[in-house]
Length: 136
Figure 1 (cartoon, helix red, strand yellow):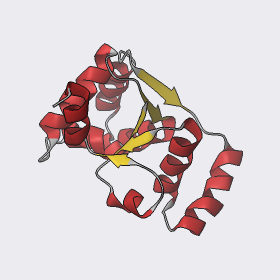
Figure 2 (tube, helix red, strand yellow; figure 1 turned 90 degrees about the vertical axis):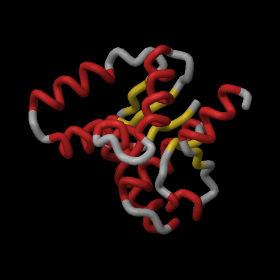
Figure 3 (tube, helix red, strand yellow; figure 1 turned 120 degrees about the vertical axis):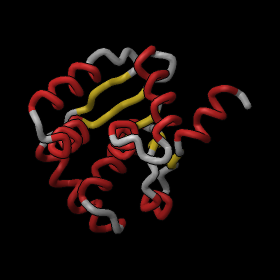
Figure 4 (cartoon, one colour; figure 1 turned 180 degrees about the vertical axis):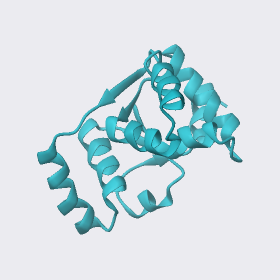
C-alpha cells in the first residue's frame, strides 16, 4: 500500500512535466489494481487550490470512484501530535502529517517531495513505481 501525496494529483490536474506517469498510476488506483491511501487533509488542500466549487465537485466525485483508494481522516489530537513530530524531524505540518500516516499505515509515500528523503520514510516516484509494478 502507498500513501499518495498531493503533488501527484496536482501534476495531473495542471499537466506538469510528469503528468502522464502520474495519470497512469492514478488510473491503476482507480481500477483497483494498486491499493493506496490519501489523506482527507490532502483532498482539502487540493480543493483549496482548485477553488471553484464546480471544479472541486468534479474532482471529489472522480476520487470517490477510485476502487483502490482509501481516504484517511485525522483527528485534532493526532494533528496536535504531528505538530510536535514534524518540528522534531524537520518537516512542515503538511509533510509531517503525511509522514505520520505513512508510518502508522506501514506504507511508502508516492511523492516528488524530496524532503521525505531526509527521513526514514520510503519515498517513491510514479515512474519507478510503475516500472516495479510492471516488472520491468
